[in-house]
Amino acid sequence: MDFMRILALDFFDPQFTMGTGATVICINPIHEHHENVPVRLEALKELVTGKTSGCLLITEPERGSDAVHMLTTCEEQEDGGFILNGIKIFNTNAPKAKWAVAYATAEKNNGNLMAQFLINTSWEGWNCERVGIPWVPKLYIGKENLINLKVPKEYILGPVGKGRDHLFEGLVPERISIAVRGISECWGALAHAIIYANMRKQFDKEILLFQGVGFTLTDLWARTTALTHGILKFCEVYDEKMEKHKNNLPDNVSRAMVALGSQYKYNCALLSKKVCYEAANLMGGAGLCDNTLMQDYLNISRIQEIIGGSRQIQNFIMSRNLRSLFKNL
Ligand SMILES: Cc1cc2nc3c(=O)[nH]c(=O)nc-3n(C[C@H](O)[C@H](O)[C@H](O)COP(=O)(O)OP(=O)(O)OC[C@H]3O[C@@H](n4cnc5c(N)ncnc54)[C@H](O)[C@@H]3O)c2cc1C
Image 1 (tube, helix red, strand yellow):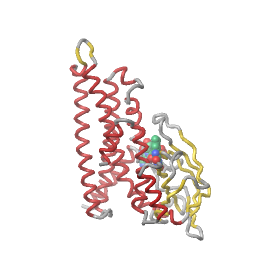
Image 2 (tube, helix red, strand yellow):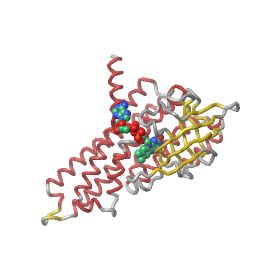
Image 3 (cartoon, protein in one colour):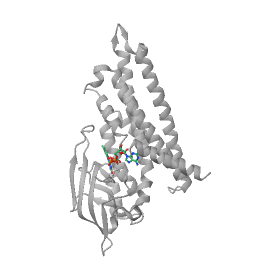
Image 4 (cartoon, protein in one colour):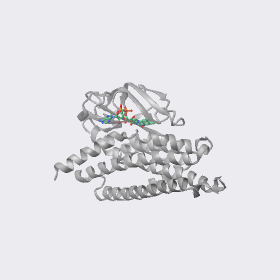
């Protein structure tokens, strides 16, 4: 269902679709860990009904790919609440979001002591400025300086020691939704280029009929179709496993899902970068103008490779997986 939602939205506005993706990765941990606490249910309701947007705070200025060695700290108070201090950066929607899910640690650089919090961005201590990312000018991406930000205890989604598990639990669906966005961008760019190549004439013929154009398009189309089927199958299997194991995957299944999530994110981001560029290129000057979505597709396809773990980090995760497969032989 989410695949269809993303595909449909992406055809109208890829930047808006990316913004909704950031709200979804804020929703997922609240959905998993609300434990029927009224304030969490209230936040969840506002987010899923679209009343407000959400954001997720993992990345810090000094800790990007190395996300588990955080510097943002959380200090427990006598009333069971926590005080957060630290700086987060590149958080999609943050300047506009009402709700944030954030990670911090009881001891700097100690991934075992991470915790996960739900934050109302109107609280004192939340200081957010917009970061300009020219490839997605419509999006509001934030840098937050958390200064003595008090989080009451009913807003703790994961206590100290549970933060890292919660972070990894969210990464597979996050990567798959980035992969789905990549594939949706491929279809959007292809739709533009296929229509254009069927209409545009040069040398008295539709340019599609020249092999240089037609065969390039068929190559991109074939690759996009194949990955679309692959990722749809993955979504089906993931949903089945989550249902079968009541959202608590056994270790071996979870490891397989992590590897597959990385593989699809890696492949779809690479394909999106190639398809969006080549489709624009086949449209000649028209592919570079700002009166179609082509420039959005081109720009956003390059961002997919960075967010949710860069290309090299997906390789790193996959190589670790190969190692553990070998060790388990
Ligand atoms: C538009 C946009 C939106 C974003 N939205 C969010 C968000 O909503 N929430 C959030 O928390 N974060 C968000 N991010 C942050 C994003 O996840 C990070 O930018 C990303 O994880 C990379 O971190 P970094 O920028 O610090 O790069 P670095 O980690 O500094 O990486 C720099 C380069 O070094 C490479 N590298 C690093 N370590 C290794 C290694 N071990 N092996 C090989 N190569 C390595 C990387 O691949 C990269 O090429 C967003 C970023 C952008 C650009």
